[in-house]
Length: 189
Image (cartoon, rainbow, N blue to C red; front, side):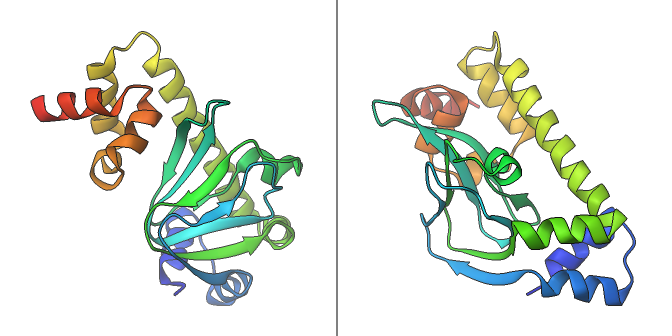
């Protein structure tokens, strides 16, 4: 259950066996169903999730009830409603499994305990934050001025799993286009 997490940690930094076991002790296994909500709108994010198997999306809804996908995370990645996890204010988004998933969950208290105890873990957390920022910036600035076809091509290049594992409706909401437009573009590529 912890082999993917250990592999992830060891790829990012050096940990001895005892440290890895100590870190893993703080993560609790969690099996979820498809479409399970892990964090609801206005909740305070109290857990960080490492994905062993599955896919999770972060999304919000408009006043009209339309879902807008903001981020997708897959195996070997961490995910949470990060602003709420950091500042402990209510989140303005949902965190949902979109596949049957196997996760490792760590509480905010334990997560920051590991950040403070292990400089290597703190470095990994910084890398996660930086990567999240970079991906968000590339998406925001990359999409400015892009037409629908260019957005789809950008996703194929930068996030290839998205169009394979995520429904057209969810992918279209991430791209800011209609599902029918996405289907038409995919059929031509």
